Length: 161
Image 1 (cartoon, rainbow, N blue to C red):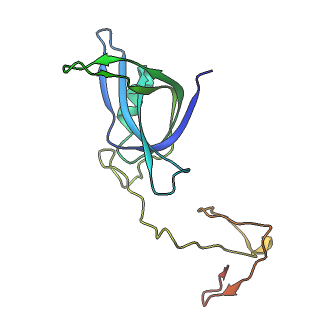
Image 2: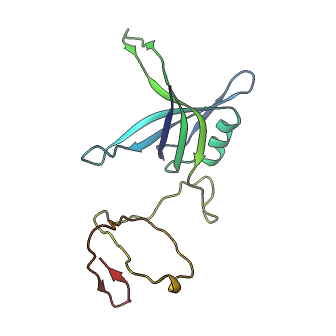
């Protein structure tokens, strides 16, 4: 079995080449966070996409866009001009999911950037009665429902942990 599923951000805009019979070969690098590392480390993985899907990647993906890839690992060997053998590994994508799209205000030629968030600030909203909720927007966060909750109320009425 040779299956790979990755989610990461493009390190630069995709590059497409076409074969003599018109088949698109799109290549890009995906920066995937290494959650097992103790520091902020990412793995940079080469991805190739073929055909119409490759053309769509070139058309809609840009540097920094969050992207999902499902495919298989492919290894190759080559010898450079100095006689050193190399063994590159890349992912041949069967499916590419565009997890981030440009906003209406952003032209497709501009990379989309996300707002900066302080990494050590964590906001948790607690104890909202269901009858008071008209619409819920999930932003992100973590809550351990097994732990005791101590809340305090801010001036704006939010209950914080």
